[in-house]
Image (spheres, rainbow, N blue to C red):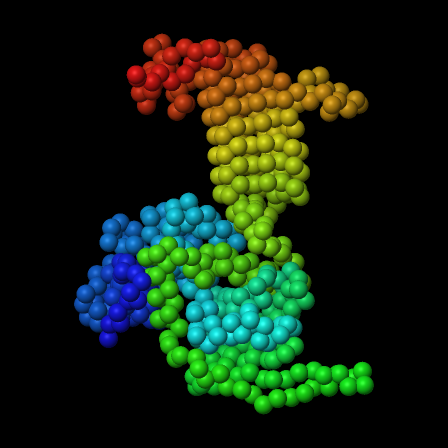
Length: 540
């Protein structure tokens, strides 16, 4: 039966990618809400069954058909976890709002990248942490937030069952995201360390049972126990406060899902004595399907621009804990420290995580690296250096200290960008080209007080094995040929070669050498002479 949408918003067109066991629940809910327009799956038999069940919808086999459909405003992704990042990224870039099932992605870098793309395109990004929308948990969180439980001391959760056993992910990644999401929501903070242990019984590389311990800066402790090798189903969240204790048991009938225990610890003769109270049922919670509420929330966010409760940032916080827990598992239970963030520096933390650095790269403290930047094998960024967004730093590159590099720069292998060198946006440094910062260096004499600043302006290209002597300026969109030695200023758009480098022509913004009429044969841009070199000629 179709349920009318809330009057606060009209129905946006929704596509569901992935119609497996869980995806069909998302299909059902969005169809009943009147929002479903399209279902995409690689199984033609599944699509045929859904078309019979929901004759009003369209079906397709390729996600590309979803991206190109103008009637689709929002996309729900319910595919295997390893596909979440690529599918969500393509949908966001295509201008679609995105709901992606847990986890948001597989790496912190991927999660931060999705947040950045969603922000840049003004799109909703929501993560399917279902239990945040469960009416019982919403009620429990309200009790915690209002101080009804007192100071929270400890939280633990059990998510146990016999099956469904999976081979594409372990029990931690399959079961724990929901519990981690709830615990982070209740505490209002991120853990400063995690420690996880587990057992692999059905497959030597896949954990069937895991226990994860979380330590929070406020002193709260928590643990999450998950298993798909358990004799009975157990889905329980226990919150221990110093005034009351709460148990959310999702296996119980609705009136018994949330119990409050008025247990307290009282001191008598300097001895702590438990004062037990009878459990109290919280029976005023309206019974509603959590998934329906979650789907309605997504539709409302798409229609109104409201930030989801489980937005990309919330998904990234959970992802950080998952990855730290996996790292601890891989290291046989080692304690893994996390960088704790506060609301004031959360944006900066996300920007720092948004870049990718190979595990062999070294990033000193005090560096600022933009989102989307990639730093490859054996490179080193020294303290005080700033690298803009979407740069590509090759292998065995040294940057700094105190170097500033703009956005979208590409630095190829075996380049050292020393103190005193500044690269503006879009600079290309070819393999093994050389910067200097001291004009007349001596190995036995320190001359760092004689550093001469070098400026490479926007869009310039420095060819392979070129040498740039310190103290000069290379103009915007200049082109320094391979092997050239540059010891004097280079004008804008100049094409220079040789030792010492001399100008042999002019280069277009697109990199093509200009002919005598200063018009680019490739892109058609016209130039005129200027004091700084040449500049684009604009029609009046």
